[in-house]
Every structure is written in structure tokens, then in C-alpha cells.
Image (cartoon, rainbow, N blue to C red; front, top):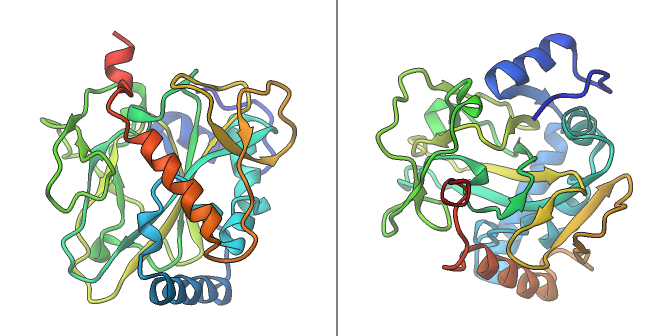
Length: 278
């Protein structure tokens, strides 16, 4: 995806890095007071609901009023606007939570594999709610891989892979991989085709992040009518219904709604991008 010539926030060097490498990191967003309050909310939800926010696979940000607001944070959206334009939909979102030494990992993948959108234009944002570094399993990526081919993903479930379908790219040269080291409150942004993943958390404390997947409104769903969250600008195309907003944190109506979105994402008839583009 080409970056617009005029940018709202990104410097020429950052714009060049995104075009060359497929990502920018780190970028600043939240104070530690805000991230601390967010972690407390997540812990309270887990105690009261008996489930982790990480189980809300496709519409995580709708589960809490604060994450619904974070999807609209100007510090994030000014960057996203520079990459995909002024009209922005939050198409999907997910909490990525690894417990200390729990063995969970994210295999090498491209975000575009199963999203079912056309054209495939999307910016992925990953917000660190704790420090995220090599010791606790931060995001890793292969610079420049967004310029390569759309890669076939193999589905293999049954291990500690956090991806919903167990999808992974096999036989990949990852010798040039780099770590996205972030302080809590910072974020990264990467291209939808960038190959990335993460290793297990070898520290004794949780590693928590929240990912947002943003699209411009001209992007369409290829797997039937779906919904997204208009977070900036206007939608003049009408390809997407509007996601509901949470009435309060842990809104059960939202949790039920998010469950339906997950089922749509993991449907067996959804063709991965590598197969659809042949």
C-alpha cells in the first residue's frame, strides 16, 4: 500500500521506513497511569467473567469502554490516517495476553491470510499495555517481507499457538527477524502483509497487548455482509454495518456479539488469501 505524500504526523524518515521495512516502532500513545488502569480492568474482568479478554478473538476492543475509546485515540489514528487515509474503520481487534512462562507463542504469519477483504489494504496497530521485549515474547517481524509474495499458511492446531486457526508459514528464513521492543503505552504499526510472530514469554510476569486492524471504507468484505467500527471520518461506501458500542465494561451483549464475529472468522469456507489470489 502506498503511503500518502502529505502526512499528518509521520516524519519523512518514518514514512520511508514503513515503505521500506513494512513497520514503524516504537510510537508513543499512553501514560503508565492509563495502562495500569487498563490492566486492572482486564484482571477484574477475568475474575468476574471467568474468562480472559484474550478469548474475545475478533472484536476485543468492543468489550470495554476504555478499549472502545482507545481505538479512537488521536495518537494512534493520526498515524493510521497517514497510512490509509482520513476515513477509518476498526475492522477487528484482539487482546494478546501471554502469561509468564506459559509457553504461548504466535507463529509466523501475515495478518491478511484470513481477513476476507478486497482490496487488501489494512494497517495493523499493536499497543503495549505492559513492556514488550524479547524476554517476554514481543512481536518479531521480517523487515521488507510485505513486498514479497502472499504466502500460503498451513493450519495446525493443538499446540500453544495463539492464532485462532493455528495458521503458520512454514519453511521460512527468519534469520533477519527483528524485535519490536516497546515500553508500556507505546505502539507499533505494520503492513497487513508483513510476516511476523512472537516467541513464548520466558519472564515471570504477563505480557499484554491490544491489536487494532484498521481499513479504509472502500475496502469490502469477500465473505458476506459484516460489520466494522467507524472511528474517524465518514463512510461514503456503506460496505460495512456499524459495530455496537459497549454499554459498560464486560457488556454481555457485546461478548455474545463478539462470539459471532469469531465464528465468522474461523469458518471452514473462508479461503485464505494465498489460495484466493491464485
